[in-house]
Image 1 (cartoon, rainbow, N blue to C red):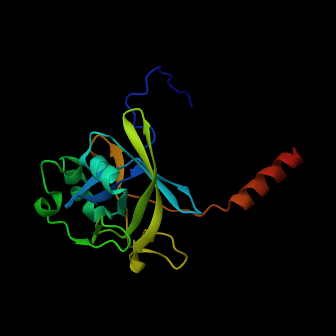
Image 2 (image 1 turned 90 degrees about the horizontal axis):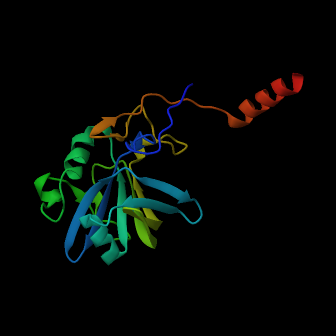
Length: 198
């Protein structure tokens, strides 16, 4: 493969597709949600999850005030909701009312959980760090809500029953198309055996 080398990173879409989540927040009697594609698990024990949010966003303001949020993972059927939520600010629009979004109460946090989510992390902020034009909120996952029918017996998302929304940048969305099992140990063993025979 011949690669293009450029001094600028724009457009900054080479890391996509990325799962599109809906992050909810609540403070001062107001709730909001925004679409977030920049998010990641960073620790299993304790369970820490991080989201990257611009300080310009209303959600940022609510998370700073409350110290908590939820991360909602939604199916492909909710792709238009993700796009609508991403296109307006909670400062101007009550998104829950405008888009008729049904919610459930968080069990450990005041931020709501979306009924349409096949899974949601309830999070309490453990650290808040500015990086460039976004802030990284690192949070401990204090509870998980998940739909049993969306997952296999060993806890993986069942792609035959649920296809999550993934974001490609520039208002483009994609679904998961294929799942394969790759036995890492066996693959390494085979490669090392071939190398040994050379």
